[in-house]
Image (cartoon, rainbow over all chains, first blue to last red; front, side):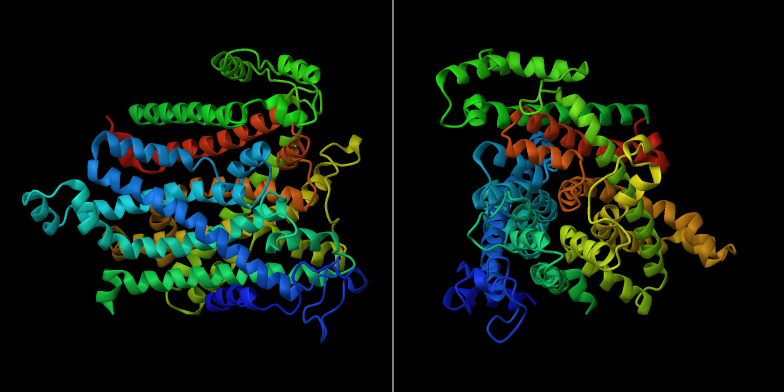
Length: 259
Length: 320
């Protein structure tokens, strides 16, 4: 499922059955057929082409939002684990506080000021990822800091940043990879919701969430339009969640020993 | 326990205070001139000046923040630019839809999750467990607004059992009533509950499995309790602690989901209010609604912390 999702996005860079934004009103609301495999929407745009390009939008948002969370969150988490004491307490309270601002509320605030758009959505989702990665990194880093080889490095005179770079980060990488996969899935859901509400990707750029919004207005004339974008979102998210679970099973040393 | 509760209350108040500063900073200070944002680029200097005075933008920022917070604590609020009504009045009207909707969704999700999670744990590694986990995995992947649209397609468009959206009101004088209002919120609550129930079911199963391995459970069984008695009498109470944490964390997603689902079903709740405010560039409403939603999330997490102390006797004595 994940390969299908990524493959679709990659394919859309080279080829789509029809230009995704090409309007063809005489052919609007066409049923699935030879020319348009999943039919057309209310403006005659090909559904398959929009799904393929929409996958690209979802990946873009997912990757950037996860990167924002990863870079800022891991830095904060490692700082908290390296410094402990009041620094750790402050970082953790700040991350707890950020949980009170789900991506949607941040997007509402930013959308009200700067107007809705892809960047607003990415920033809002990225901000919410920061405390997730901070907590994960801190918890894993704390476990590494108590290991004998870290104690040995400290005894040898290595500073906290050298230890973080040489020992902590490589040992928490697997946990972060799993978390990244799961947050990627969450980012796709969040982007779809924001686009559905008009706060995310703006026309004419195709987006699965906005396709659902448009499909809802045609529910009585063309109910099938509501099925494809939702199924695409669900399959992409399901694939990423299953991949994350699988990676966790593969990379978790406790589970590896059981095998 | 008294010290524990005091600490949690202090954290609650501090979090609310910091949240209010962030909301104020983003919506009042970041834009530079809120009046310019509201009126747009074509506003005349006279209309800008008039709106700046009306919004109090000529006052120092700290004073504006203080007046806003003190006003809210006293039940007074600024007046909405588009509705010309105090935001407190607008929000109170809309909460008559949003609060019951969120409560119904939470209730459905908790009941379903507890039953499914306990069932899956009791059938660990068998067909029942695999079935519940598969369904929950699918439930987590499904966007709640898509599920809402599918529910409308099935029950409103095809079967015509319910209307596709709207809310008739809680009073019969307005053409609604208790039962009519409940019917209007049923599908939205189910759409919201699916994702929450899926997440909670997985955590419940995991927590129940963890507790079932504890020595005290083996002791309870050795003393003659049946599996069911041990499960409901001992396991569930101890398993609820981590589940409560997740319920608190999930509430933020529930609130977001409520905002989205209100758009799908065209419910006149707080979610639709804030989107109308964005379209009208009514920053006053956006500011107060966002703070309210954040406060709800923080409050629920505070309640979860308090419930911890009630459920876990160790916390009652740990701070003594």
